[in-house]
Length: 473
Ligand SMILES: Cc1cc2nc3c(=O)[nH]c(=O)nc-3n(C[C@H](O)[C@H](O)[C@H](O)COP(=O)(O)OP(=O)(O)OC[C@H]3O[C@@H](n4cnc5c(N)ncnc54)[C@H](O)[C@@H]3O)c2cc1C
Image (tube, rainbow, N blue to C red; front, top):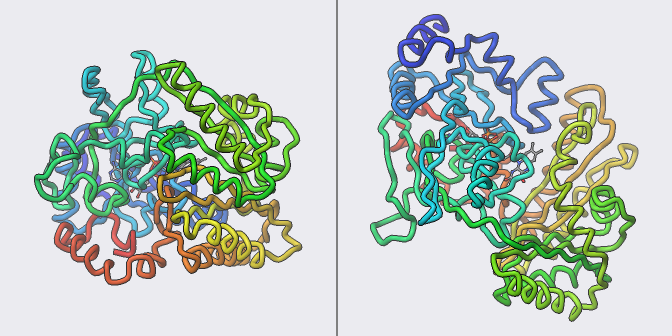
């Protein structure tokens, strides 16, 4: 079967772009979900492709999808494999479709401030190219060195500047994609129209289940001429949240509002900026093309901090955080086995956000046996006019040696946080996507809406070829 599949794929793409089982299982053994990494360490990878293929054009993608339909083999699109929920794992075998050879920047329209990038373009590379033209994509995930455009759209990602520039869904004007039966579709050129439903957005967050995204038209911005940073300490988290809310409803547009809880201020932020900090701490950034306007916005934003008795801290805290914002996500600082790590990231409106914070963090702490010395650092960093995100990051320095015990401990803490957050009024989740990790919660999240999603999936993908089982579809 595998040999025949390879022969057929080699008729569609160049033979060097077809990787046989052994190589596919080595190169695509798992994404960055802790369980993917731990399962590999235990010799039982979650991702077990029979073959990997690297298409170079939308036509090749369409032919591969048609082939998979003819012979009934699942396909899992793979971007950078940087997802933290297990979405890119080929847990049912079949074909991994690595999109990274589709990495051309097809068009840059400097008048409309848009570009057409292929799905396999890595965020960092796109940003570097645009910066040479005085432009910016403004989608800055911490995984920028790995994450692709297709994977960011697939997982509905977000970057550190999202509070002003939006999540990935706000950056995408239109897409080119291949349906699960092999048709090539171009969605309408712009997203603001009244030509029926917005088809582009159906694919955003679909995690490879409804189509393979091959290119996207993206909104760009001018590189800002000025950035102003500020930092404030608060007596309690409640005041910090109220500051965030007031700024967001005021019409001010800071790209960055990061509110660290006392543990996150003491550990994560202090380490990043090499200053001792304690108590809820907020880092802010304002930016723009008109320096006077940026200064004015910053002054008004900082005034709101003072209204809630914010204690002004050195602005260099913000500047250093910005310079070092990616450092701690990569070696030698990135966590490794036998640690256990994971983030419950959820989103809620202002009515519920504080309750969500306390319920989530308390549930995670309660679920962690004290002998494991779990650290829990939490921040709120993607803000909206109506609410915010809670990002509760847990880490156990040394988990149990036994894989099953480690998994049970991880699940106990992680899902305690997830369930408490949902009960307190949160939506799962803000930007990491669903993957294998949250699929069991889709029914609870969507209720009868799952029937609608399943019908969409069934009608688009009658042979259940694209990422079967993902999103619990
Ligand atoms: C250190 C670190 C930091 C991170 N920081 C952030 C952050 O700041 N913000 C954030 O949002 N996320 C972050 N993440 C999570 C992750 O990087 C994002 O989910 C990212 O969007 C995934 O992109 P990817 O290209 O690696 O996709 P993958 O992990 O390869 O895939 C993600 C999903 O998209 C699907 N997919 C991939 N390509 C396509 C395509 N062309 N068509 C259809 N479906 C496709 C896959 O099948 C899968 O379901 C971080 C992860 C790590 C490890």
